Every structure is written in C-alpha cells, then in structure tokens.
Amino acid sequence: MKVELTKLAHARSGDKGDTANVGVIALKEEFYPILVREVTAEKVKQHFGPIVKGEVERFELPNLGALNFLLHGSLGGGGTLSLMTDAQGKTFSTALLRMQVDLSDDEAESLEK
Image 1 (cartoon, rainbow, N blue to C red):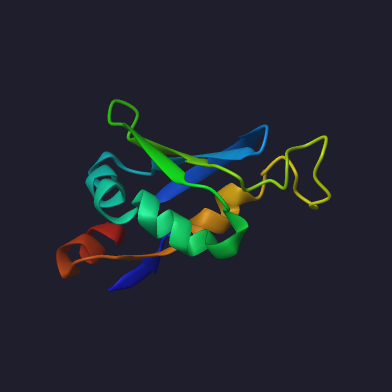
Image 2: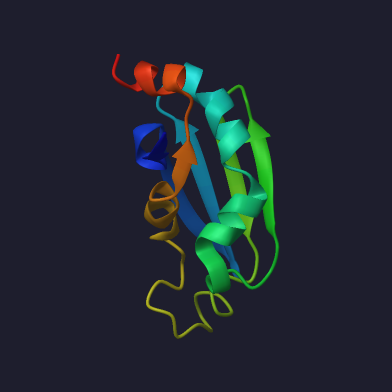
C-alpha cells in the first residue's frame, strides 16, 4: 500500500547557502524503521526532480527518530542571490511530506492504531 509521508512523519526545513536542509521526524517510534527503509537519498532526489541540481545526502538520527537531508544546489544560489520564490527552502519540508512510501499490510494497520 502506498501512503503519503504525512501519515508517518512531520518535517522542518531551512537553508544553508544553496543547500536546503530537510529534517523528517517519525510521528511514532515504530515508524522510524519505515522512514529509514523508504526515504532514501535516491528517492528524495527523484521526488524533487530537477529542483535539486546537486547530490542529496542523508543522515540518520536514530536517537531522535529522524532523518536529515541536505539537498545541494537546490536554492538557485541561496537566499541573497536567488530569484526563487522560496530561496530559503522553507516549503521543502511540505513538499517532501507529499512523497509516497510503500507500506506492508501490517505497517498500514499500525497507522490506524
């Protein structure tokens, strides 16, 4: 079953120069392994498509139940140089939460509890 990441996590984003920084935090402890499995750097890069010109790095923070992503080359040069509407990457978290992830039947059942 496919679900939006919004069912499993919340997120926050910001910028560092031309790099967007997106943190994804599991809503429940048992959702963290699903995030680790499903929200890979490759899938995040694919989800954002041509917006991300550089590589995507992923960092795991198991003690927080979170993943942190750096999306290099995604802000059109950064806040002071960019002509993008969202030059600080504040909407990147909402955009990532719209990504579809695959769940097993058992995992899908745990969403309803």
